[in-house]
Image (tube, rainbow, N blue to C red; front, side, top):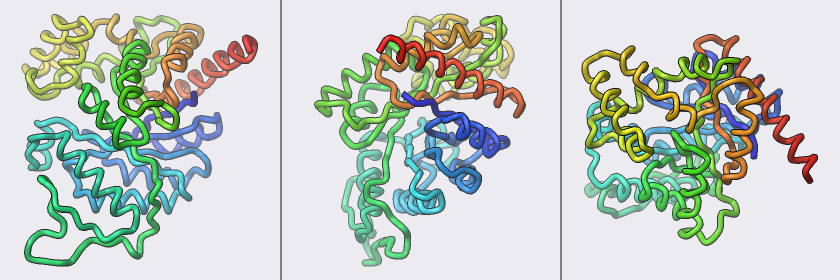
Length: 341
């Protein structure tokens, strides 16, 4: 297992450079409330040389599949073949409210989307007649064809997912899975489903987003993560919120209700305070280096290939400290593993 880091656009280049120096395997850029992914990835590509780069994840409703393929090919070219394309369907409220794209049959739509992206990355003229995408549309025979773009047919493609249907689709169509709010136990259970679909986990990348906060006092460290958790649990309606549903399934339904209600009322501070420490501790790395090292080992044992650290410190100095602390913890895990071997 390698370490990865999710970057914030304000500090992305500095953090990525330090992560590369420390031997991290991947730097990922999320997309949504604060920035798009490709712009930041382009800047990071220019400042790094070895670390793999990935979108974590680009939102499917925001772009046509051909533009996504073109963007991926361009990022792969400017990074010297280091790019991995992470995609996610987002959620109904964001899809419709932000991008004006309806959200019916998201998995069926995603299946066609990936088909078109793959076709474009193979350098073929894009001709697809599906339920959701008809390319080229009636009235023209001008098919997209990335003849001038530096395309790579085997460019790795990851799909984000929380629910079983999304996991099955990732197992069937993708080269990897990007998870969120994932405990080691939940990852191990999810990978059993992936194995059933694929027949093997060989060659399949497992990249969970795991929040991390390092401090001597675990409770104090957890306080820096509360707003992040509250934001996701309070996102969208309770009926359509995948993160609300996930927290409920994990046994924190009462807290999820309070968090969602406080977010809906505009009480973000109250929502953050309502996030249970136990929920964060199960799905994050919290506390001093000595406390998070065994948790890192648990993620490795569960089948994670790249542990994507979501670093939430507000300052560059704080983010660099977390990146270094996690590397120290990882070195301890590797040393123990080497000794046992």
